Image (tube, rainbow over all chains, first blue to last red; front, side, top):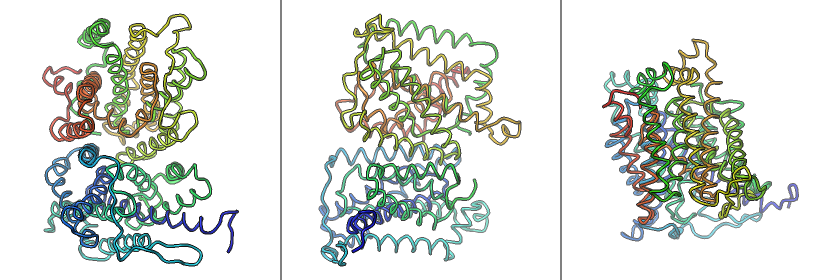
Length: 295
Length: 325
């Protein structure tokens, strides 16, 4: 086997895989943020808390109702999405006429409430969630061991990301959505129910966070704090990619996950901050983000 | 930015000649009350309120008057707190020099992060500042001198100018009172200076300010640095009071807390942040027994504040009195 700069390939590929998995979560979460941002022009600070809620809903479905992983993969995002719709209808929609910073503050408050409640009821030690039987074990690829579930996370996130991209960029519904992003008043004048679309878009973006949460549940323990660190990194990802393009959000997510994984191999101390440093560099060179449009 | 529309005219009136009488009276009463306070309530608690009042006032300079929402002010507050604690404990500096060192460090940090952050606007700006603050958090977690999870503990209070011992709470109280009250007066002066007027112009209509020939980015960078510096002064002072610099000071929830104080008290008002800081610190003090519920309660106040009470306590008062506060 080859060796690169004295680093055994198992270590390198192992970290690459870990990076790719982190990247999968970055991609799905930043995609959700970008979808919401496109139509609502707000940043959903509660995204991390709702990702955590997705994991908890999956855990509750299993432990209280005996519903397993596969149904939960559909049900948990639906439940989280429905919760998001309630939030949008009862609170967020009251703030659209104001400065968008108020919406940001509102979702920040919601994040505190959701996290605080889960922390009170479930503590911070984390709850275990079994890998589904069909995906336990792994493949020996000769040069490394690939756990089936981790491979599934990458595949599932790619499917969801490109499915979302396809709907938004290639279908009639997506065309309405993009049109409403450009000019909501005009689209409304054509008889499209824009408030309904905004509501469903928020619900969908939030459901993506819930989906990521279910995917994460068997890998990381189900923990009330699982969203808070992650979401700040995802914000940096979003700043780097720019929220102008759906594909941009996806590509940047995977890319930064991999870069972070590689940093862990070559300079472990820097892995926690590498994304923020890349963000600083991007701000210097191309302030609108790699895929962003000038504001 | 339309964030502080209601108070704008009010503030514009206030800037004519010197401090209006009402403000003079309020500041005098406040100072008199603060001089008596340590003999009535627990001095440490009073000092904590004053540090957070300065922190919130510094944050309000940026948000309320500059229209820039930073979600990472914990970086300057906590960063200065670490540097000041290190300076006092390891370098053996006297308290005033330790605080000065911490504040200077916050100024440099604010200058660097500010220069990068002002390249984006609005919600991106908020995200960038939050991300950089998280980076500072990771540095505080991993660096050698910060003591990781333990923080820097038992920081000596030392002797002021090498002469006056600050070991006693009352002596320390007046040291803290001088720093924080002085800081708040300085912020008042900045807001009511010609610089402050330009700042408000930029907040209200940035393209127009540009077309009038103002170098908007330079103003933004200056106000960002000033705000970070004063937040640093608050953090450095706090590390002397509690003899401790810890991860709590640089955590993102600290950034959220200062936003909450300012929102609750009244963005873009002079006295709002002070009232907001007083309410939140008192609340934390009395609710401490409820443990994790404090987060939930703060979240609820956030949500209700944004939905129903955007002017804040002092904002509402100012509207009733029809006077800028």
